[in-house]
Image (tube, rainbow, N blue to C red; front, side, top):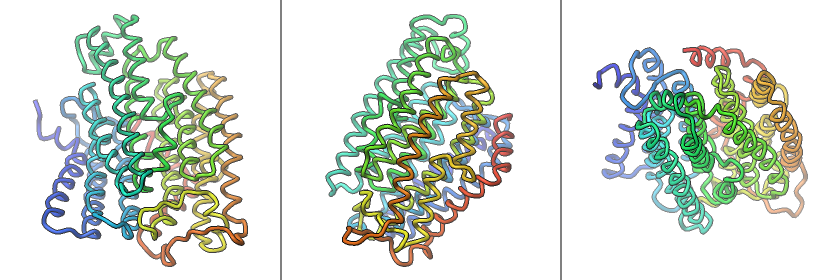
Length: 477
């Protein structure tokens, strides 16, 4: 039976959902771009402030489990969504057409992500995943006058529907074998009856979630969708969406013993190796910055699959640390693309030659991108190095030498194309096409937020102890 304390445990979800309803009423009454962005930001900030109250609550509502993993993921989701709202405001200023609905879609998708990471029942997993995915179709196709944006939305819609079909079929097989959709009950039943039906169901769930995570060979939609979608929608897809889906996959791997069977371990290990190497190798040939970052995200979630293979208590801590470092780095990299694209009303600056000589025109913006790419490469004294170190340490502790070798090889390949982008920023630009951010980008809220994110990359790279302590405390809880 639902009690008041159960509602306190999902207070951030309630607040974000209520903010979306309020936003609908405000938009119906009077359109105002800045006011809409402020209300959205306020709802996300209040949700963040309520996270301590959520952590002190002793209960969880039906179908959900508000534990340390859900709290870590919830904090990262709200922070990423807040940064996305701030960057979206500057990006949409020059957009011709209604701007306010974008924030409404973003809040609905954030609600879905918060529900997904706390799902303790396969039905809630499906509801949260769909609530996250459906607004993303509209966000990616928001610049519908641009052919690529509309294509990105349709492509993501079709492939996401395919992934959902695999996921539901896998759930149906597990339900047919266990007679329940509750993860606790399913976990116990899998101990008693781990057979071909269980393995088939778990395999289909991995395929469905693998589409969402862009795991090779289910990654083909990623570069096209990243390139075609508006920059703020791509930021949300690369951060909040992938974070939520990975957390639910980790929760399944920790709860269901079938994921620790030898057959599933082998399958996930092969997928991890293909994803690490495939994402990095495909990024080598990209002259489009958003496509390059898309393949880069494929490789990074290949590294994170090591935590799924390990499936132990340290996997939660490793996942938390790596996701923090990945999120702030990705926000910074895509934030620069958003800043350079924003004065042009939805036409993204994604071709790499457009960034040639950016340092000589916008030195601080070039510095932010340099820091973000150094972090993506895992260079010491950046946050990315801490995350990659944790993943390698987890692989070594579990004696997963093939995976450790894949991480090292993938990182070496990635270093080449990350350096290629950084060198481009500092080359002279005679006769080259150019795109610039607004002259006052650094004095706007979006620019200040972007600089703060870049500083966080450096601070966490030099002094990661507070982040690690926070994650350890919640993961133990």
